Length: 516
Image (cartoon, rainbow, N blue to C red; front, side, top):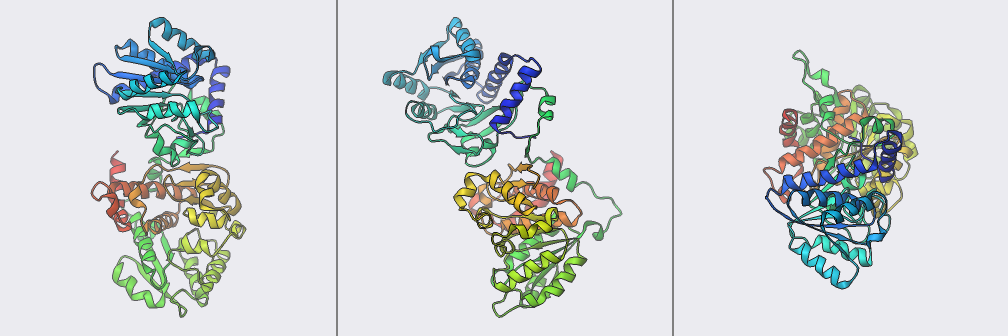
């Protein structure tokens, strides 16, 4: 599914209204009606008490449509206007006129006493509809409007936002000062990026995408770079196998990972690769760790490489590692390698001398520093998988800079490196050098534990080894990785979830998704 910025959604609306002559009132009517449908599906009572807070723009008009339909169905509805009646224009003014003629209770929030009445009414409501501000908001809500937001948030019942929670930057997913915390957000036409990115996703609650009557052709004519990763990627990668295949049909992955005290990272990556479907997996480790690999992962082949006194890979192993990489279908490199100077030499010389598809993670990223241009020669053969801290080092930025603009950061890294980039974290982003980006919605906070990134590295490496392109390998792996974490959560509480649980849940999660 496409995901849009506010400016893109406004252009889609404009093309539908001006190009196809669809009346804007029809779109507003459909938007408000979709809010009502969602409310009545969630609150199954004959008569409910609803408060609607409306701002001065079309978002307020959407709320008035919802108020009218609820009133017409016999529910107890009160509407509170954030500005005087004379401030409404266009379609919102039409909706206000209809409400007035129907006799719906309407109050203007113009004084401390009116604010107190609204607070009291909302506190006793089953549902409050937030229709204060939509996607056009670009500054913090303060003073009067901040107080309106606090009134919405005081509702003990269901809080429903129309299109986006008021006070949310619907591009970056950041609160602009005071922000509504919704239980459900009914967003119109297409999802907005700020509803998927964190912390915006937390403010939005359950996001429901409502069809408001914009023809598909209008969206298809637009060049929209953003997409949501869906389960359809799994069918492309993990379809049914032919009965007469063999292990050689599904690729051979080389995992280069681990050092003294960090061998577990390599073992997790290799185990994840086998569970993801790679036909063969070889784990290359420092010589002294060889017996640990053989003992812990019987499905994985082990290869020993020269090591230095610190227990990390030595640059003397370059020729052997290069030969192994050239004989395999894909390479996963980085987890637990350390940033020892020998490792830095080994990683750079290896990556610049082979064209084997590769996923580069953790310490293999750290030793590159900010030299993303180094990777341009490899280009689309490569997937980079930084977490926010690693991304900050790659872009010479702070972690807060990365988190405040996750999409922009991922795209900047993809453009500079020429690689597919996976920016990990809540709402993982997959970015392509051509400007496309893909947002993931699977996963949970229990996955914030050591080793889960190593699991993802092994998964991406496995799909690369199967012969899939880097973009599809990244998207399918990210989606399944999160889905496996969600499946594990059905039996294990968040605080107890560990990386191995995700590996063990890959098979059940995939089976469940296929069934659905």
